[in-house]
Amino acid sequence: MALWNGSGGGGAFPAAAVSAVLVAAAVAALLGAGVAASKFDDVVQPSWANDHMVYDGDLLKLRLDANSGGGFVSRSRILYGKASADLKLVPGDSAGVVTAFYLSSAGDNHNEFDFEFLGNVTGEPYLVQTNLYIDGVGNREQRIDLWFDPTADFHTYAVLWNPSQVVFMVDDTPIRVYENRQNATMHGHHHRHGGNANGTTNTTSPPPFPGPQPMAVYSSIWNADDWATQGGRVKTDWSHAPFEATFREVRVDGCAWAANATDGDAGEVRRCSETSWGKEGRYWWKEKEMSELSVHQSHQLVWARAHHLVYDYCVDTDRFPVQPPECAGR
Image 1 (spheres, rainbow, N blue to C red):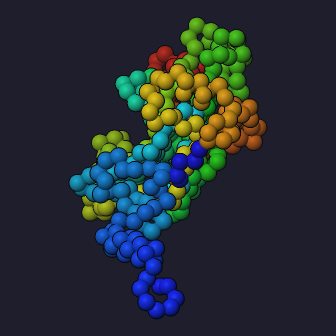
Image 2 (cartoon, rainbow, N blue to C red; image 1 turned 90 degrees about the vertical axis):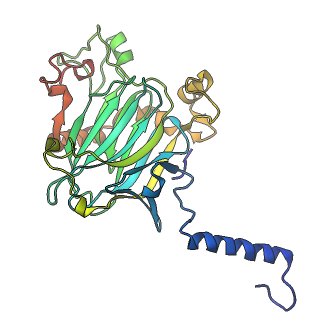
Image 3 (tube, rainbow, N blue to C red; image 1 turned 180 degrees about the horizontal axis):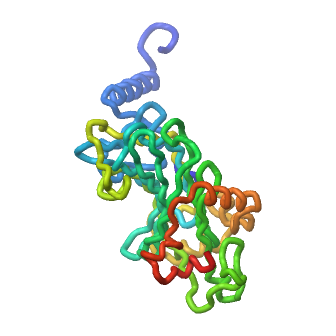
């Protein structure tokens, strides 16, 4: 389910017309007070610092100043699906500023899929950091630079999540794929992007994959000048505040978790995991063609990583002398 995203003649007004006039007056008063309905209202709500989530016509802006950042959260949670945002990043000198768009479940053993956009000094490129937390454990960072200026126009950043894979996409180009190789490991098979160099998988340590925990969609902007830009060497210049990240649209399309269900509700897990249709319609994100990249998408992924990948935890032997199991063969 998409989560969004005078009467003619003389005499006295009829009662219905009077009601309409009163409603119109009330709406006008709200608009005059700066409170307006938005296309975002059915999709997201402020998660902190409400006054730093600002509507500007058909746009939504998250604002960072010296006092606070801000954020929003989706009104519903999903178990599998796709979340995307049409986003224009903070322009100019954005050093120290981080804008995030991510999915996360709740609790210490949560799962999380992160886009983090790391600001930079004027003229230097943004870096996009992706990360996955599985059962509360992260440290799976990868960073890319972008093939366009993300501050000049809106671009679409999306996460596709199903029982087979988690895919991070920029303008429909996959930049990262994290596959579920647990079943493949047990049966000795491997997928297109997994497996060891000799064509087999590690049968002793199956790579972890996010379990079925319902996730909400979040975005936030905050000051991270202790690490975000050049390892923290460049600090936020508050003379350029406020810093604003601008959203044109936020879309959440997935199996909507029942509002009154607990996080581990077995019935909801079955409904979202084992069926192809539901109250939201067709569960397209679980269909066979979504279980792995197409040939064209695989070529796009190879291109993006060959030309734009600047950091990959899988090859960082200083941090990981023993390679994480999901990195086998890379």
